[in-house]
Each structure stands twice: as C-alpha cells, then as structure tokens.
Length: 448
Image (cartoon, rainbow, N blue to C red; front, side):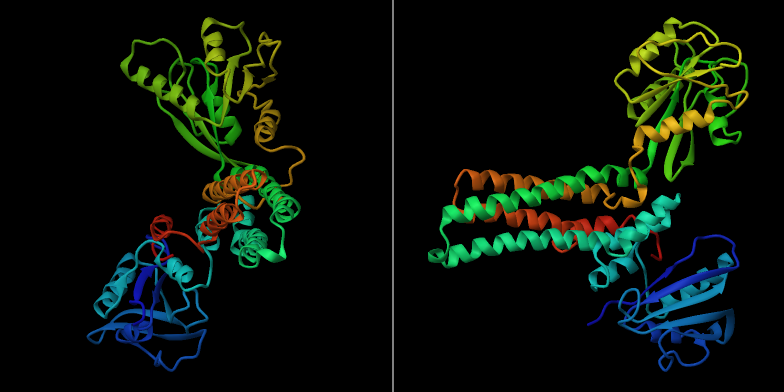
C-alpha cells in the first residue's frame, strides 16, 4: 500500500500574484482530478503543464495552471501535482479544502522533504540544506547550503565510512582466518597507523568547521556601556539606518533592540542594550538585567566608552564585567575628545554622530570571527548536529586507538570502529533514529 496523498501550500500566506499548492502521493492525479476541469491528468506527460479550472459542483473556484510530475522522477519520488492559482487568501484555502475533501491529508511541516529522504532521493544532510537555502540571509549562507544540497557532505562522510570499513574488513579477515595474519603485526603495522590517520583526518575537518558554523548560524554581537555613551547611535551608524531611538536623555533605551547586518558574508545579529548603571527605576532595572544577560550570552561584546571623558567607576565596572568575554573596546564621541587610553587593549575611536570609524569597527568585528587566511569558499561542514556527530565518531576512534595500543583483542577494537561508523551514519541518515528524523523535519516550513 502506497503513501497517503498529502497536500500543502508551498508559498507563504498573504496576498500575492500567485500561490502554489503541492500534492504528493500515489493517488495525487485522481485526487486533483476530482476537482479539476481540464485535460485528464492521468494521460498527461511527465513535466507537462495543463490549463483548466478548479470547480465545486460546477461552480468555478479559480482559474489555474496544473504541473504534472510522474514518479519516480519527482521531488518526493511519488506522483506529484502542483497547482498554480491566484494569490488571494480565499482561493488557495478553498482549493486546499476541496483537495482534503477529495481524499488528501494536510501535510505536516517538512513532510514533502521527509518523503524525499525516506524514499532515498536525498540524504539527511541534503534535506537539512533545503531549509538552509530557504533561511539564507547572506550569499555565503546560500553558497554553503547549495554545496550541501549538491552532495559534498554526503561524499565526505561516505569517504570516511569507506576508510573505516576497510579497517573493519581487515579485522574480520583476521577473526575468520587467524592463520593468515599475525595479531601483533595486524595491530602495530596496520590498525594503529590507519586508525591514527583517520582520526587526524576527522580532527582536521572538525577544526575547519568553525568557519562553516559561523557562516550558517551567524554571530551575536551585543553593544554595551553606561547610559548616554552613544550605543544606539553607534548601532544606527553600523546599520546605516535609524533603527534605535536616539535622544540626549540618559536611559532612553530600556529594552533590547535587535537588528541584523551582513559583513562580507557573515550574518551579524546586533543587540543594543540599556545603559548599565545603578538605578532605582523598576523598568530601567529590568532593562539593565536584560542587558547583563545579553552580554553574558553574546559571541562578542562591543563595549562603548565615552572617549571625550576619562574613565568613570561605571566604565571600570563594565571593563571588569566583560573582561572574560571576547570584546572590542569602542571609544565613541571621538569628534569632541580622545581621553580613553587602555595600555593593555586597543581602543577603536569612533564618532557615531559623524559616522567616522565605522569601517574600522566593522573590520574588527569580522576579523574577530574570521581569520585573514580563511577562504569562506572552502567552508563545508557547518551544521552543529553534523559537527557533534563527527566529534562522537572521533571519540570512538580514540577509544579504538587506545584499545589497539593496549593489545586488546581485535574484536574489542572492532566494536569501537563500528560505533564510529554508526555516528557518521547518523549525519547522513544511514543510521539515524526515527525520533531524530521526526524532530529535524518538524522545523521545516509547511509545504516543504
């Protein structure tokens, strides 16, 4: 018995020129055919487009174009129909209602891509990259996601698994035919060097994954300082837009203000915070507590000081508060003075009012996360789940290496090697638990 036919809206809700409705399953043609007045879908050629109307009891609901895709050469490897209708809210909802009435089930989040995975058209890394493409906000994120969709991670993992299987096969031969290989020679001359080489390869991939993770997930940068040092003005100058309210009144910003900016392919999530000081005002105290929490959680802190005056006790307290965090000291209001001098740390002079120093500050933010020697185009592994599983695979190899050097029986070494192979398989979905698959696809868009 085939999969139940599902239906979902593939375009975002709202008024637009067109909406797209996606239908997939063994009965996709007959389900759509019940409400479609036009040429027969059962006789339509693969990748054909048909004009007609969606009707209910002879009444026209909408004029549509229907795209026909025949299994197995479809996104889900099932029969698929896509209905292009007008972009009003009522038209699309009425068509979906009629399709459900005709026998389709409403698709769950990510169910179309999940079927593509379960039917073997894509692996788990390629499925995850679909949503990375949808969510991409920088060109670097898009390029990285396209690499994964193109199968580069799948090929990388397959290569590592192949190396592991070669080692496991040598152990199996020794177990089945012990007279053909001396155990000490096998361990010292074969297992130890080959396991070590594979561990080195995995460690290198993990170390290179830092850049990919930064590209995929972006970084959190919090602007902090005492009241009235120009934090909000600095944020506006970096963004080149009036995002935060700016006044001469101390304590204007009382809550977190978030915005995003793209610095040469790196997505930076900027957060402007309330000025940190002692306060008896209840609302301001809440804002100050949130500011301190944001500083604690940030990947990088821009600690803003008033360059037109000497350090105050509040400044020194903030320097202490952020000393263990990655930070950049910003000396703002440099257009009216440069009195801040920290012998142990660089101060970037800026004037948010005159928009000066922004290029230097932007470069400093970028260089905090990306080395000058780094080529963003070389990044591949980026997903935290993939990196975590690769680390687990490496840990199993470490255990196998320790067992081999301790002269433990080869079948004990094989257990660790097979465990490493299994962790790698969880990356691509070869050995992924059903609960993991369900959780991953639950974060997808409806209709995707």
